[in-house]
Length: 142
Length: 144
Image (cartoon, rainbow over all chains, first blue to last red; front, side, top):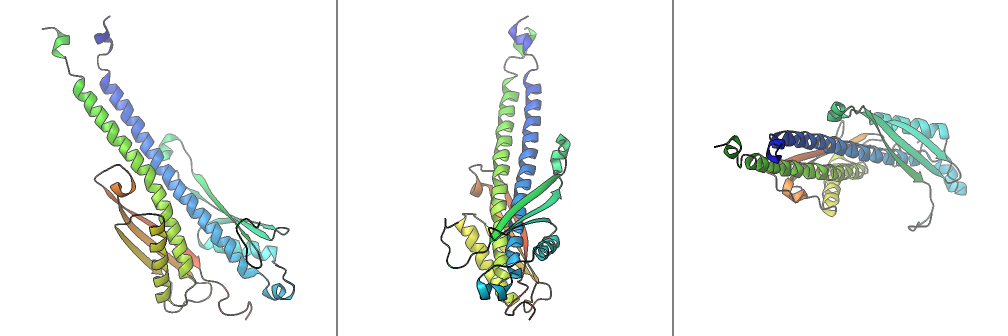
């Protein structure tokens, strides 16, 4: 059998196959990009949720002895309320030793066009930590 | 004339079409990879603007601050918006109250050639929205 006969009709299937690959790649890029943007949104929400905790610091106690006092259950409730208003679930960790509050914001999102490739709904997470400090803090102090 | 000689060169045309389609598709892939990066920066600009707006005492001041901060952020990050619309929404309007949502909506129109080397005949409107609540205690002590 000659080489020419072997390659009869080779280009059209190759073109069709390449187009399918490119279309799948485009869908993956589009949805992947959307998920990245959502992840950044979640990180920003976690950031403002963590900052909101500063509203709960006992100002009187801070002025008296400089200690940062937080009611852990109040912190969790406030962060949950704040993030709930923005459509997120909150997971809050209070690190007493390091005077830090870490907030993880999460919510479920559809995989969009990737569902055609068997990808299910995704949970988007973003986290941020707020640390209580006094005085002027230079980069690298912690 | 044999069957083979009649089909001489018939593969050239579909091959050229295939290569062009593939290049166009890859151009789209590059473009679509760049769009989320731009959208992420616009998202961050919206969040920064909302945070700035939530520090204001009136809706007018919040709008001014939010627009200033959003334009500054996008300019710093080199996001070339051909047109940028900043919309600040506060329920009730007037004076900002404690624990009140300030929502900033940004709409930025970019051309493909501004964000990638790919010159596609397209421009895209990328929007982002972010809400920040004003402080619970503004100018008063907790419980005051």
